[in-house]
Image 1 (tube, helix red, strand yellow):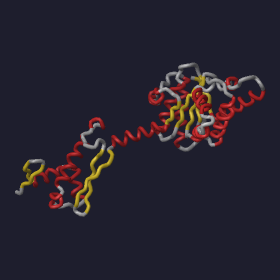
Image 2 (cartoon, helix red, strand yellow):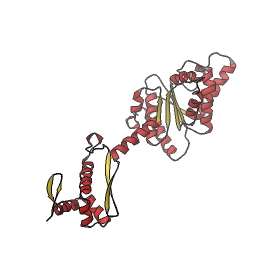
Image 3 (cartoon, rainbow, N blue to C red):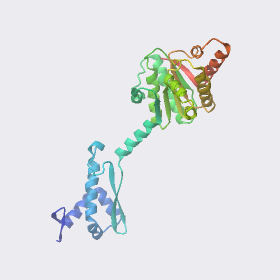
Length: 292
C-alpha cells in the first residue's frame, strides 16, 4: 500500500479514508456529491483539516471555549468540479451573541440606571392584587400587539421604590425580545436634555425619535422641574402624534393621572391650566391607570 507524508508522519491513505467515511458529516458529503476515492485522495489534506475543525465545533460549549484559529467561525465544505473547497461561516454562538446585542440596541434607556437593562418579565414579582392586574394587562398587551391590534399603554402610579420603573423596564426587555424598538426615558433628565438641544439642531431629531419609536415609556413624569415650554412644544406634539398613530405609550409617576395637571403648571392662570389639561387628556386617551 502506498504511503505518504502528512504532518511529518507516514500514514496509510486507505486507513485515513476509511476513517473519514466513519465521520457522519463527511460520509453524507461523499454520498451526496458522488465522490470517488480518487477525488477524496486528491483532496485529503483539506478533508482532514475540515474534520479537525468540525470536530472542534461539535464539542464546543461556547465562544470562550472555541478552539478554532478564527474564533467563532464554523467550517463548511462544498464540491466544485472534483475539487473540494472549505469556507467559513459564523457559528451559532456568534449569531446568538449578535442577535442579543441587536435586541439590546432596540431598547434606548435614556438617562436610566444600568439595572433597567437587567430587568426581565420572567422575574416579575406579581405577589399582590395590584401587581397581578398589571402583569395580566402586560400579557394581554403583548398578545394583542403581536396580532397588530392596538391596546392602551399603562400609567403606573405609586410611592417611591414600589417597582414602577422595574415594571416598565421588564416590559421593555420583553418587547425588544420580540423585535420592537423601545425608548425608556427618565423624564426629568429628558426634559433637561430637550432644553440643551435648542439651537444646536438636535431638538427636531430628538422629538422625531420620541414620536416614531414603536413603544415610548416616560418614567417619573411629574417629577421634573416645571417647564411650560417642554410641556407645550415637546411633550404635547409627541403625545398627539402617538395618539393619532396609535403608538403605545407608557408612563410612571408618583402622582395620580388626575393630579398630574397641577404639577404641570407654573401658575394658576386659566391659560396655563387649559394647556396642562390638554396634556392630561392625551395621556388619558393613551393609557389605563394602575396603582402599584
